[in-house]
Length: 340
Ligand code: SAH
Ligand code: AVI
Image (cartoon, rainbow, N blue to C red):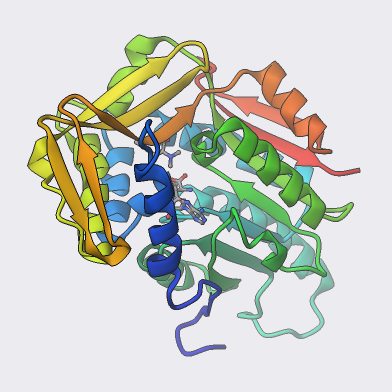
C-alpha cells in the first residue's frame, strides 16, 4: 500500500498549465467573439468555489443528483455489475460515496461467500478518480482512504478531452461522468468525447452519465447567477488564473458576471463582460488584447438535455441504454449505458 494510502499518477506534462493554457488563451482571445474553455476555472480557489456553489440554495443540480443516487445507487450498481469505478472530472468525489457504498455492499456479499482466509482489510473494490485539479484529487482521495479501508483508491491527474486512452484496462469497469460536466462541452466536442470514450470501453464496461435536464428559466438562470455572488466569484476567478499563470494584468473589477439562457441551443452561457474599453497585456504570450466596453468573453456553456436527443447522441457514439433514473420533478438524470 503506498504511503498516502492511494496511488497518484500525474499524466499532465510539467508545462501543461503553461503550454495548453497559452494555446487556449491565444486561440480564444484573438477571435472576434472571445471565449475561454471552462477547464481553467479549477485551480485551488476555483475548485473550492465550485464546492461552495454546490451548497447554494439556487444550485439544484448537485443536490438533485445526490437525491437520485440516494434512492437508486444500489440499483445502478446492480445493473452495472462491476467493482471498479473510474470517475471523470471527479472533483470532491462526494456524491460518488453513494456509489462506493453500494459497490462495497455488493462486493462484500460476494467476498463473504468467496472468503478463503483473506485479511479483513483486503481491497474488495477499486476507485480511480481522474481530474485536472491536483488539489481536488488529493483532498478527495485522502478523505476516501480514511473512510473506506476496503477500497483501492487511485488518483489520475489527466485531461479527459485528451487522455482517455489512459483508462485502466483489464477488469470490467464503470466509467462515471457525474454533475452534468458533459454539458460543459460544445456539441461537436461532446460527440468527439463520447466516441473516444466508447472506443476505450470493452463489452462488459458501462458508462454512468449525470445530465441536467431542460427546465424553466426561472430555475435555470438563478442557478448560475446566485444572490450571494458565489458563481460570479467562480467566473471572475478565471481572470486571476490568467493573471497568476500568464502574468496577465486583467482588472477583475472591470468585468461583470453575465448569465444568458440560449433557448435555441438550450444551454446556459456564462460570460465576463468588459465594463470599459481597455487593453489587457499578456506578456507570456507576447499579446495585447483589446476589449470594447460591453464586449463579452464566453467562459462556459452548460447545456441542458432531453432524454430523446441525449439517447440519440449516445446511440450515435455506439452506446446502448441500460437504465434511466430521474427525480420526481425530472430536473436531472442519471443514465447507464452499455456497449454490447
Ligand atoms: N464531478 C463533480 C465535480 C464537477 S466540477 C461533481 O459532480 O460535483 C467539474 C470537475 O471536472 C472539476 O473537478 C474540474 O477540475 C474537472 N475538469 C474540468 N475539465 C476537465 C478536463 N478537461 N479533464 C479532467 N478534469 C476536468
Ligand atoms: C461542472 N459543471 C457541470 C458546472 C455546471 O453547472 O455547468 C459548473 C458551474 N458553472 C457555474 N456553476 C457551476
